Length: 237
Image 1 (cartoon, rainbow, N blue to C red):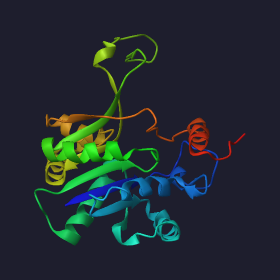
Image 2: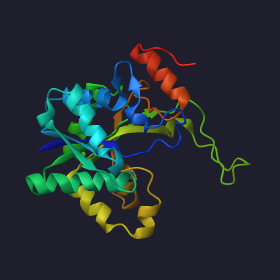
Image 3: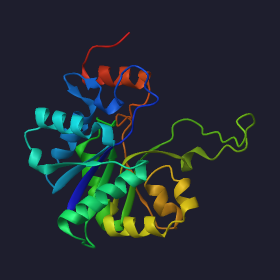
């Protein structure tokens, strides 16, 4: 079976313009989360789409899904964890409780605040996860990447043609992801920045899927303004 996992557990600490997490901010006539969910529901290969939400916002998430989504039977909302990867594991556990463990299950994880993901990217993630076991969505770096260990002096300038910027979805064979995560030490888990690093830390190969610069993540006020323009909504001052 194939499952979507939309990660909406953040509290929006970097977005200082509202009293709610950024995934619930309006984008046009619908919350950002709903735009993202609609993209996932357009993919008929998903048996179910799960949303991981901070415990304080579970009821709100259920309300807006009920209001905006007619195909509610394909959507499940679960309580998120203390960080990104524990939210993913909460979703994995919910899936296994409902459907049992299956070595062929695929999970496609995605940021709730990337509402412009394309069906092409989602489909290619599913195909890559089936073929390789793990994949990451990336775009080639267009700017020179500068590394600094102390924030003051340049440590290294890597060769740009080898550099990519990570996006989501990040997709996996679910059993592989769960086993790899459980094999990590507490220290290894503490340095994780995303789900693919679970595999990278344990030397599990991760294939690349071509992303799109339009598949932006809404993190700052400036991002939100750009997203409103892309969605055709009113710009904010």
